[in-house]
Amino acid sequence: MGFTLVKTLISAIIITLVSETAKRSPAFAALIASLPLVSVLGMLWIYNETNDIPRLAAHSEATFWFVLPSLPMFLVLPLMLRHGVGFYLALALNCVMTAVLYVAMVKVGAYFGFKL
Image 1: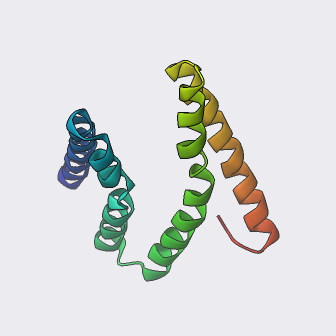
Image 2: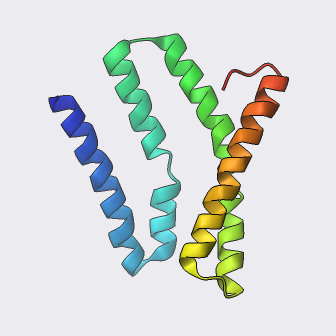
């Protein structure tokens, strides 16, 4: 229970750091957000809790493949916002698009023999 609380607090600190930094410097906040902090922390926690190297390797590989379908959102969202689409609608549409791309990634991965 204590380790779960520590993980939750660290995650909250990272999110708060990004949102507070964005008030002063959107570019620096984007840099912080783009760092694979969540992935690295997740790998540390998986390793510390399980010492399961094959699981950690599978997690790391799957993370790579799941990053790819999330990338278009960071190009499409600003385009939509700059063309007058409201923030919540643009965000919702981009979340749907990303979910569709995730499903496509799973299907394409399975076709090529990846277990995602």
